[in-house]
Length: 282
Image 1 (cartoon, one colour):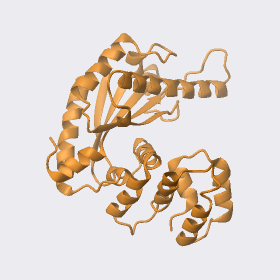
Image 2 (image 1 turned 180 degrees about the vertical axis):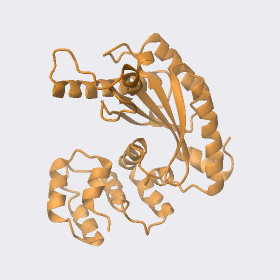
Image 3 (image 1 turned 60 degrees about the vertical axis):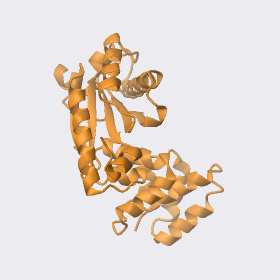
């Protein structure tokens, strides 16, 4: 059965007090009792709004509930909103095999629709590959639905130790907006660093500073896109991962260069999925 502990971990909420409460009191309670307890707490947890409670209860149904249809899962999360989308994108970024984009945004994806979306994402990938300092990779969710990861070299975007975009970075992002991004695409932006220590700081302090730098760099990219005309509603997730997700060895200069990066994930929006299901996606 779905457990509240798993639910709390999956959406990465910061309500640590309540996480401990749940772990200590409902570890083996059946599904129905979990729902009952959670609803009873809705007036206690920081006066959560009605829609937030629905979002959290919807997510509670998801982890491990293999018997539910994807359409049912999509309906629950679709009514929930931002927390569900954040959990979904977090799973995709971490290569979560159980993540399904359609379920996360409340839209079931038909087989034919998946093909149309794949074609559009393939075009986006090819266009992204032409951008200076960018690499593009086609990825798929648990149901085979396509999305694209565009990786920008931080050496192109930023000067060492800084989060201000360079002139070259702005040019690359302008090309991304013009040639790749369309109104029916959602974005997730993730900053990463290498593990180089900061002069005058301890190892632990350097890890913390790299974390902050990765967050600032991801936010710089997001802010520039929005200020340049991208709808803020398209940017679903902005996060820094610091040095915790290297893609190469930090033992060499070349490896460290690969690890200093900003990833922009291009995801099909609910509008794109609905257009694809209707056969009108171009």
